[in-house]
Structure formats: structure tokens, C-alpha cells
Length: 337
Ligand SMILES: Nc1ncnc2c1ncn2[C@@H]1O[C@H](COP(=O)(O)OP(=O)(O)OP(=O)(O)O)[C@@H](O)[C@H]1O
Image 1: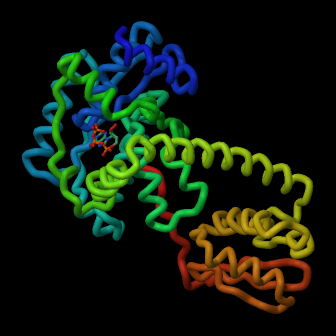
Image 2: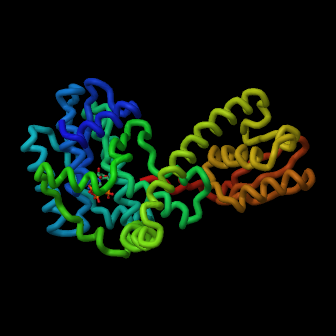
Image 3: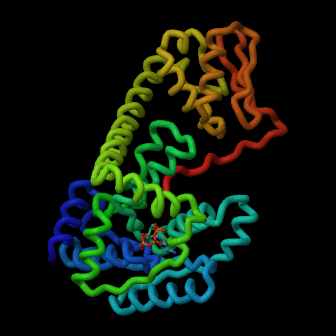
């Protein structure tokens, strides 16, 4: 094994992302990062007794280039003797049905496809090749679109059956590895266009910040990301315990107890409200949370609107969360890639 393969192995072990004998689906776009990941996993295959296969989505968005990517991925899998699962999507059609951007639609289709292959083919995990810069982009993207603290954790190394084993690797290391191994990859021409917000952040914003604050941005965002992740873990545990000690703080039949809420700090009240809004399939935003905190300082009989037709009424000793029957709840946008 070469230096990067050893580093990859030790990071996987430290984060317990892969176990001996795992059946892993490698999400392969054909781009440099996922081609490097395919090679890294192949090097680990005998050490960890892994079974590997490849999954590729053809989003049919770039004409011949998309078909070229598909052929390239199929050949790469064939060369390594791996099974290759491919699906083609009419992404534009799905985007207009979902009323989402092409980028967001592709993301939804991609993870849906991975789930299907995992389920049908009995794989234990799917690995994507997100690395340090992808995480930095995601954190900045979330920040610019008005996310709150937890979204600053960026991309998680593990989310159920999705693993991101390259999350601590830098682009320069990946490039060096590809060169050393003579691994070819495809260039996605849409990555250089600044039409997509993410590309704009990658191609314009990050280089500008790095020009001024050399080598400061990535480590800082990495630290923020880790701290936000740790804070979230701590808060989950804290609020689980709090709800066990004080049942009035869990939303039961759409109700929370005013007396229990009023004993808490504003921070705690907002965290309880966030959980209640999520249970009611209502997007959490700072304005709605402030309205609910203000409601606690008003009087019984008062009502506030908490978004997407959700009314919250102070009735006697409880706050009642009531969905307006004419409005439909929506799923909040995912903040992770
Ligand atoms: N069309 C696809 N089919 C399968 N997996 C994909 C596809 N597009 C992206 N992925 C997975 O998601 C990861 C992140 O996606 P992103 O769009 O940032 O990558 P990319 O720029 O297309 O290519 P790469 O990361 O391979 O250099 C990829 O590294 C890959 O593991």
C-alpha cells in the first residue's frame, strides 16, 4: 500500500466507517475524486476482505458527455472485475415535477438510486468521494442560504448507510495519488460554470478568500464543522434526558406544557420548539422560533403562525400545535449533499 492508501485505511478505522467483510457500493461519477476512491478501496480490498461494486447515475443532462461518463465508469468497473449498477434519469422532467433545481433533483435521484441498489442487491454501505473542499463548500453554502448552527457541521462522515471515507483527504493529495497511479478520470464541463451556487462558491468565493487568508480557511471550516457536529451530538443527548425528566417538554398529541417551558432558558425553549416543528413537518426558521418564544411571554388565548399553515395556540396550561387542514406539510430541504 502507498502512503495515501495507508492514510485512507487508518481514517476509515479511526472513524469505524467500514468493517471486515463489508459489501460496499462505490458511487462512481467518473470524476477524479470518485476514481481515486475506487482505487483506494481496491487497495484495501484484500486487507479488509471487502466486496466492492460500482453504482453510477446518468442524469442525461450533458448529452454525449453524460453517455461518455457512463461508458467510462462501466469500463473501469469491468477492468476491476466489479459489478456495475447504472440508472438513467430524465432529470429535467423530475426537476419540473419536484419543483426543485436540477442540482437538488440530481441529488435526490442519486440517493434514491443508491438506496434501491443497497436494498435490492444486499450491500451494507454506499461510499461517496466527498473530501475536505466539498465539506468547506457545503458549510459556506449552508451559511449563505441562512442555515443555523447545526448545518455548519457540513457533510457527515456517516449518515446511516452512506459513508464518506475521503472527508479528511485534501484535493492536492487526491490529485497526487491519481498522478502517481496513472489513473484517468472524466472532467465534468458543468463544474466550471458558475451558474450553480456550489460552483460559484468553489470557483470564485473560496479562491478569493484563500488569496487573502492563505491556508486559514480549510482548517477553520474543518474545526467549525467538527465542533458543530460534536455540539449536535451533545444537544441530542441533553434534550433526550430533559424530555425524560420532564414529559411536558415532548410534543404529545400536538401539545407542550407552558409551565415546563417557562422554566427553561431561551436557548432551551428554542431547541424544544425546533424538535416540535420538525415533528409537525414544518421547516424550522429563526423567525418562527422567536415567535414561539414570544408567545410564552404573552397570555393564554394568543395564537401565532409558525409556518406552512401551522398554528400554535396557548390554551390553558398547554401550547397546542394545530395544522390548518387546507395546507400541506412539506419536507424541508436537505442541507447536506
Ligand atoms: N453521477 C453519479 N453517479 C454516481 N455517483 C455520483 C455521481 N455524481 C456524484 N456521485 C458521487 O457523489 C460524490 C460527490 O459528488 P460531486 O458532484 O461533488 O462529484 P463530481 O464532481 O461529479 O466527481 P468526483 O467527486 O468523482 O470527482 C462523488 O464523488 C461521487 O462519489
